[in-house]
Length: 281
Ligand SMILES: C[S@@+](CC[C@H](N)C(=O)[O-])C[C@H]1O[C@@H](n2cnc3c(N)ncnc32)[C@H](O)[C@@H]1O
Image 1: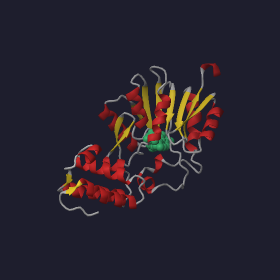
Image 2: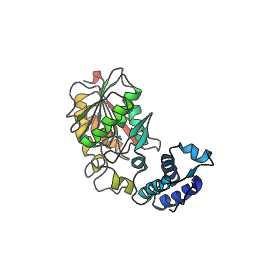
Image 3: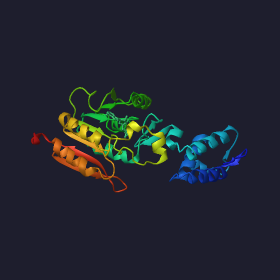
Image 4: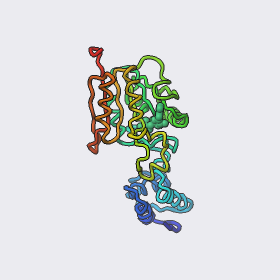
């Protein structure tokens, strides 16, 4: 893409859309608009509404650089912007953490009906997305969040501080770092099969420790489900396409009597919830 001084926004966008589209992005116009809005410090709507807006001076080089990183390096837009919206909060994200996905918002929804004051553990918190969204939408919950990655916890802790949300963080393997009684466990764990072909945005840039979970992608569920069953009467996990049946069976085998599956907006069984009532004991 070549942009000379004082380029109208529409021309800058058109060049960027071509470059980003040619690289294989599924959303070249959205990507180009988000990056340009970021460089100009305006909202995306303003790119369309303000006909006098131009890209000028150092903004030209800054935009070219971001477009190159998106098109050539396939860096996810969220890492280029440094933020990602998730439910009602804006999270800082960088390559130390998975970019929170829209489908993970269903995991938060599954936990919104927990009783007042429940103590909830978010296992594998990454950027803190699930834990912080719960703390935001249900301030009465007592939320503890763990990750095996100290890097991820640094990002999550920074997000909690910036958002002014109260979450207790602990580093460790699955539930090992969580002391005391729990009412619920929620988790979006790694669930990709080792060696699976992933889009370059994901494979090259997102942390492998957030993605892969053994030959069939189920290794973390096999350990997490019985651990959670021993600690709490409620477990909600995000699953990959085609995994809901096996994960539901793991939950039943671990003693959860009520097992439900929730679909995402694409119609994929995305969240599996296991519940054990006190009558089941
Ligand atoms: C798929 S990412 C989910 C991140 C975040 N919860 C989200 O939904 O955006 C999985 C996270 O689990 C963490 N993780 C992987 N293995 C773990 C383990 N054994 N114990 C705790 N956390 C683990 C990874 O570091 C990563 O942050």
